[in-house]
Each structure stands twice: as C-alpha cells, then as structure tokens.
Image (cartoon, rainbow, N blue to C red; front, side, top):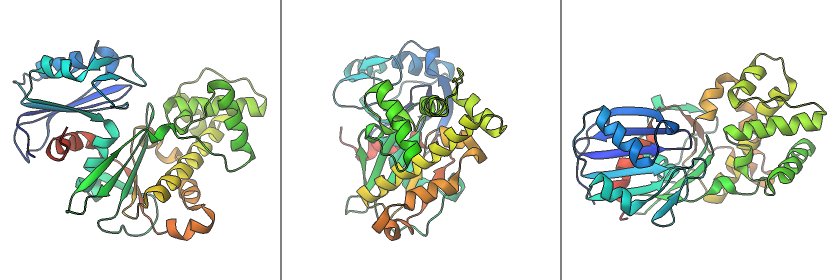
Length: 322
C-alpha cells in the first residue's frame, strides 16, 4: 500500500518534536527540523509551525511517531502534557491519511535501512539474515520494540510498552536501588532507571544507600560530575545505568529470539559518549546463566543516526493498514 505524497513526517517525544517532509516516493527527507515540545501548545501547533516556517504546501498524508501507547483515537502523552484526537488531527491537517503510531514502532521500521555509518558496534558476532531484531532506547522515557520477519520478505514491527516491565536486580546494590524505587513509585519499572529521569532516580537511590544528601542535579549534571570523577554517587549511577540496560536488553533478546541483532536507540546513550560503560553493558547482556552461549553471538549496536524514526514513519505509511 503506497500512500500519497507529499508526506508530513513526525517523531515526537516527551522533550523534542522532530519533523520532516518527503515530496515524492524514494526521495530523501527534506526540511528536517527539531524543536522543543514546550515551544508549542499542542501536537498540531508544532506541526503547523513547522510547515509555516519552511513554507511547505499541503501534505497528502501524515505519519507521526509519538512517545506513548496508541490504543484508540484519544492520545495522552506519557512524558508530555499534550493530548489530542487522531480524527481531529487529521481534520486539522486536511490530509487523506493520518497515521499515528508509537515512536519506537517507527524507529523499528527504519532498522533495515540503517547502514554501518549509522551504527556503533556493541559486541557480538554477525547478524543472522531475516531473523528478529530488538530495539531499546532510553530517552525521556524508555522505548522498546522489535522487528519480526513476515515470511514474505518484509517486516512486522512490535508495538508495545516494554519500558514499563518490572525491573529485576542481579546483586545486593541493585536490590537496594529497587527498594528505593518501590518506596518512591510503588512499581519499579525499567523506565524508572533507563531514561533521563531514571539517571536522577539512580543518583538519588545511591545517595541514600551511601548515607549522603542528594543534590538537585539534572541528568546532564550527573554525567558531568561522573566524568570529572568528583562524585562517587554520580559515577555509580552511570555504572548501574549500563548494568541495568544490558540486563533488560538481554531479556528482550531472549524473549524475541533476536538473532538479527539488538539496537540501542534513544538520546541518552549517545549523550553519555565514553561515559557509557559498553563493556559492562555487554557483560550484563550475556550474563543469563545457561543461555549465555545463546546470547554471546547476538550483535548489538548503538544507533548514531540523528533522525532514523522519520524514515520509519514514512515506511509505516507503506506497510501499515491503519
């Protein structure tokens, strides 16, 4: 199913809205733009501002990946106070088709299009062709998806909310962190540590464990303090971040049988740079007892491309029926 052009493409998270324009089939994306969500009053306002800023005409179709579950017409963002009706958005945009999907469904659909220049290896062997792939990405929240072969040479994206699975501990320190999270939030989900706010939660938990007063630090300040080697709790927070991410990614690989590889997306890990302990991530990824040998050859990559979900949003119009 090949929908009309031009296309308005969006990737909207809790912090930023990314937009692009595709004029014809197979054309490269044009007018790629990133703006803070707080600069607009609604999703439609953000889209309208983008099109006005770039003097774009009327789109025929729109496809937008959003950082929340899409279970019906009414949408409420998880980490953003925007809400909207898909039917109303379609009417406001005056498009023939308006597709709204989970942002990690869009990102998953972009995976087959990524090249070596878009990825940084995180260990493992060679990917098995036409095998399932996994996607996990810490950002404002924690996105999780996968890509499964459809048996006809194409792919089906998994649309779910895997960031909210219950987090598991592998040692006494992680157990103490989980106890802190349960007291704070009731449920200790993976997103409570594997996200920007999650870094703050890790730091706060570790300060309590260490008997220290936690400072009011933003995620980037925790990273800076860890890099400067001046704050042991901040350093420990980044260590636990890599440990938990490897553990959760390994669970995902086992669940989906992702011998086609595991992809790490989202904005947090690229921002950490060399402060991200890739070796520990890989160790925890493979540390699954009797199934360590199963996981060892599975490759993992960090996605370094800047706006791959916009490519996936366009692809979604071609492969999804609703």
